[in-house]
Length: 143
Image (cartoon, rainbow, N blue to C red; front, top):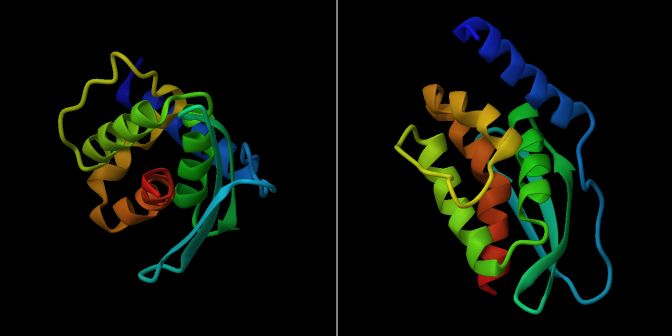
């Protein structure tokens, strides 16, 4: 597949998650709630996590922001649901490396649609948009 076709496919994946976010909403009862914002561009997110037996049993997000921010939140919630806390935090570290253009290996943890965001590394101003939900998740899981 040519670079242009791959780039177009990645854009379609991002726009699909933006227009049809997965796990959008809020969880009730015995959850960790984290509110974060990116004052640079106005992105705002609320993440609710349910952790049972050291696993992320459920996760949802709500908020408003740019397509990168909301698509990243949607992708993240799909990826971490069912993971152990340690694996979710490990995935966040790998995501951070990927989004900053560093080498990363997702051999053990499947990134799936998340890889569509790797082009964000070319736009430093957008890195905070892509990592907002991930930072909220890290904060919530470390509580």
